[in-house]
Length: 158
Image 1 (cartoon, rainbow, N blue to C red):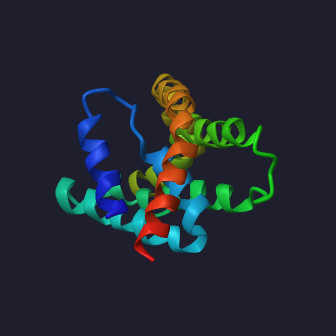
Image 2 (cartoon, one colour):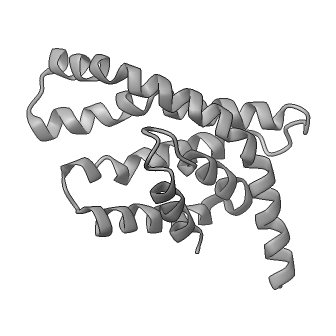
């Protein structure tokens, strides 16, 4: 259900380029489910490919969301409550700012770009990465409420 919710949220927000809740959901789900968060993340990745086509654009999705998951997994779980929202928002924003850079190695391999070509590809996408990073930061305010809602739902189903 969470993977489908991620996909549905992406569809709803497609009208706004590089504004979505995928990073927010990835962080929130990881906070709650830890290693098991990979299940909904990859359900989302599969649904995205299934409905939009398993083309070359999709290949980086096989690793790009795992990088955000891994960054959240590395954060201390006993972080003071006062700084949690800001840290999670910052990690989510960093993933948005770096999205094109993280995506670039696959593009370079798939399309035969040399290092200069890859750097040019990254630079060309910087305006979109800036939008992506800022939107991830501001949408990141929803991370704690979503994680809390998931925890409450988990308790009520047990």
